[in-house]
Length: 87
Image: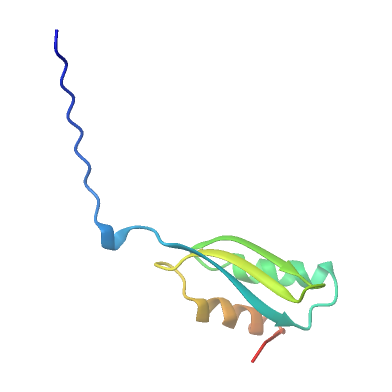
Protein backbone atom coordinates (compact mmCIF):
# COMPACT_ATOMS: atom_id res chain seq x y z
CA UNK A 1 0.00 0.00 0.00
CA UNK A 2 1.43 3.42 -0.97
CA UNK A 3 0.35 6.63 0.66
CA UNK A 4 0.83 10.01 -0.91
CA UNK A 5 0.51 13.27 0.94
CA UNK A 6 0.57 16.69 -0.65
CA UNK A 7 0.94 19.85 1.36
CA UNK A 8 0.30 23.22 -0.17
CA UNK A 9 1.94 26.15 1.54
CA UNK A 10 0.92 29.58 0.48
CA UNK A 11 3.07 32.30 1.93
CA UNK A 12 4.11 35.64 0.63
CA UNK A 13 7.72 36.21 1.69
CA UNK A 14 7.26 39.99 1.60
CA UNK A 15 4.54 39.73 4.25
CA UNK A 16 6.58 37.49 6.53
CA UNK A 17 7.01 38.73 10.07
CA UNK A 18 10.51 40.11 10.72
CA UNK A 19 11.33 40.13 14.43
CA UNK A 20 14.29 42.27 15.38
CA UNK A 21 16.03 42.77 18.71
CA UNK A 22 17.54 46.16 19.48
CA UNK A 23 19.16 47.78 22.49
CA UNK A 24 18.61 51.51 22.93
CA UNK A 25 20.75 53.49 25.37
CA UNK A 26 18.31 55.51 27.47
CA UNK A 27 19.16 58.13 30.10
CA UNK A 28 17.13 59.58 32.94
CA UNK A 29 15.78 56.34 34.40
CA UNK A 30 16.56 56.19 38.14
CA UNK A 31 14.38 53.39 39.51
CA UNK A 32 12.07 50.50 38.71
CA UNK A 33 9.19 52.98 38.39
CA UNK A 34 11.07 54.68 35.55
CA UNK A 35 11.59 51.29 33.91
CA UNK A 36 7.87 50.56 34.16
CA UNK A 37 6.99 53.94 32.64
CA UNK A 38 9.26 53.34 29.63
CA UNK A 39 8.03 49.76 29.16
CA UNK A 40 4.38 50.82 29.37
CA UNK A 41 4.79 53.51 26.71
CA UNK A 42 6.60 51.19 24.32
CA UNK A 43 4.08 48.37 24.82
CA UNK A 44 1.36 50.69 23.51
CA UNK A 45 2.89 50.38 20.03
CA UNK A 46 1.59 47.68 17.71
CA UNK A 47 4.26 45.15 16.81
CA UNK A 48 6.16 45.15 20.11
CA UNK A 49 6.89 41.56 21.13
CA UNK A 50 8.80 42.30 24.34
CA UNK A 51 10.50 45.18 26.12
CA UNK A 52 12.87 45.30 29.09
CA UNK A 53 14.08 48.60 30.51
CA UNK A 54 17.09 48.57 32.86
CA UNK A 55 17.85 51.76 34.80
CA UNK A 56 21.18 50.43 36.12
CA UNK A 57 22.60 49.70 32.67
CA UNK A 58 20.69 52.61 31.09
CA UNK A 59 19.28 50.39 28.35
CA UNK A 60 15.99 49.38 26.83
CA UNK A 61 15.97 46.06 24.97
CA UNK A 62 13.09 45.55 22.57
CA UNK A 63 11.92 42.76 20.30
CA UNK A 64 9.64 44.06 17.60
CA UNK A 65 8.06 43.27 14.25
CA UNK A 66 9.63 45.76 11.85
CA UNK A 67 6.66 45.35 9.51
CA UNK A 68 4.39 46.91 12.15
CA UNK A 69 6.54 49.38 14.09
CA UNK A 70 9.67 51.38 13.34
CA UNK A 71 12.63 52.02 15.58
CA UNK A 72 11.86 55.74 15.28
CA UNK A 73 8.39 55.15 16.77
CA UNK A 74 9.98 53.33 19.70
CA UNK A 75 12.47 56.16 20.23
CA UNK A 76 9.64 58.69 20.12
CA UNK A 77 7.75 56.71 22.78
CA UNK A 78 10.83 56.83 25.05
CA UNK A 79 11.36 60.55 24.64
CA UNK A 80 7.63 61.25 25.02
CA UNK A 81 7.80 59.47 28.37
CA UNK A 82 10.44 62.02 29.43
CA UNK A 83 13.69 60.13 28.91
CA UNK A 84 16.73 60.87 26.77
CA UNK A 85 18.44 58.75 24.12
CA UNK A 86 22.17 58.53 23.52
CA UNK A 87 23.50 60.68 20.73
